[in-house]
Length: 219
Ligand SMILES: Cc1ncc(CO)c(N)n1
Image (cartoon, rainbow, N blue to C red):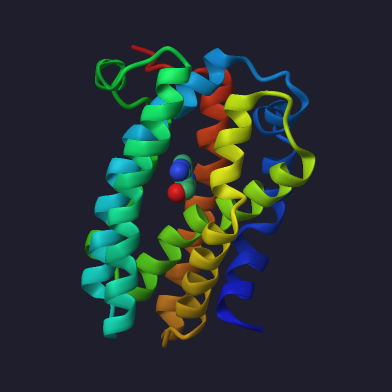
């Protein structure tokens, strides 16, 4: 079994099932998701993408071959572009400005997820950093494809779905999976990779759940 298949098998199979039947995800395609919940999601995702981009530069710095350095550095730059283009467009359609994103601040789940990613990428090994960021790519690709197949009555949701369900994003994810499968991982390191992969996979579920419930800091 490839390393990526092993990670998915142990850390993502069950959670992925929960993700695709979560009311936020089913609501994107059956038209029941409120724009308020989606607004919360896009605002929080703007915060998330800023941290994600920085985390990817840390992965790039840890990469052991030039092709991987170049790939992760490119993805870091792309994450900033996605935040600028997709979010500015979607935010405007939802009646929000970048100033509203700053005013909202990052919510509890966003903060926890960003902190975990940053910590692993800053202090873990290269393989640990790859395992921590992999669910961000992989889950969005699979969810994107699933949603594209289901389609949506809402043009705003359709635009968001098109980004992650695209052939381009699929190719990006395939290249990261190839890097993952080429990693040289020790026994103890392998266990830590499993932990990080399972944890960030859970955070992906929690991120959608927080948006669905529009979770705020309790105090
Ligand atoms: C929370 C989250 N995870 C992954 C992605 C994909 O980059 C995203 N935009 N947001």
